[in-house]
Image (cartoon, rainbow, N blue to C red; front, top):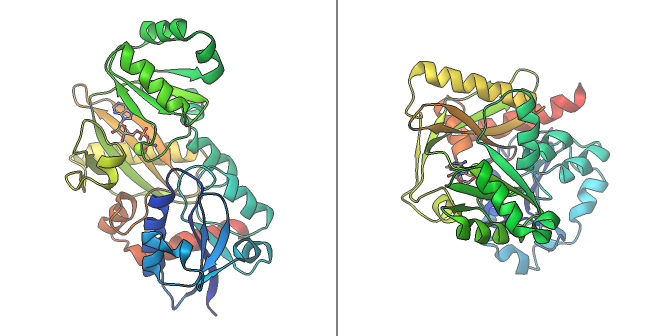
Length: 343
Ligand SMILES: Nc1ncnc2c1ncn2[C@@H]1O[C@H](COP(=O)(O)OP(=O)(O)O)[C@@H](O)[C@H]1O
Ligand SMILES: [Mg+2]
């Protein structure tokens, strides 16, 4: 008997397009001998449709106008429990932030990836800081800016930031992804511009000390006994790994394994698994670090609970180089989702 699976794609976040590419890759590679797959697309304005057309149309985005293959029963598939597990291949808000996870949980349908609390926590960069600080995990120094306070007394807040942190600074909407709304500031003027920009995306902003760093990412997989694959390194084509460098600039490179000694690799893998457990992650997450080029100190940057998932994305690539191919990885993620529900 084949297992009935729903693959969710698109979604309402700024990472809608990225999700379509990740999901197309999953749809092309999932083991069809084992799984009966239904693709469910969520439009940017939150409408759910089952899509029965070509996977290429999902990748390109033309599925939305393909009325012959688009069925208005997307949510029913979940509500009527027509599937045995859900793989939300959705990035960002309303996908990676605990909301879809909560829906699946209410409906008692197993789903791939961390649960409600963990998803919400990892999506929110400010709260990730607060929690990991309590566990003593090293992170870049920061100041949190709330929209209402900023609007009331802009100059004073800029002073507070400048007193606490030296330039350069990173300004991030707390709930961001794919670098959307993130800027780097080298002076007060850029700080102010960066805050204005970030406030368009969120009412809670993280201002963070910039670290002259290498970026190392660790893929973690599992429920009770998670394991880490060999660490990878990102070499952005630009000053930092912004949206363009991530998805459009061919000169950005993934280095697998990361340029680290065996001992350093083991250290960072261990740290990644520990952080995964601290944040109550299950299923999968990619734990991203910044390693100071001058001091070699390791800082946690962020945790992605549904990381980029095309066949050539970092997360699957890291597992591939640790001996687990893309198809097997998808199998295992669905198994982990079902096992968790059976506990
Ligand atoms: N404190 C920092 N120091 C140096 N570079 C940073 C820092 N924070 C972010 N960056 C750069 O900005 C990119 C995006 O930031 P990140 O926190 O990973 O947000 P996102 O969730 O959008 O990926 C990182 O990949 C890195 O290149
Ligand atoms: Mg990132």
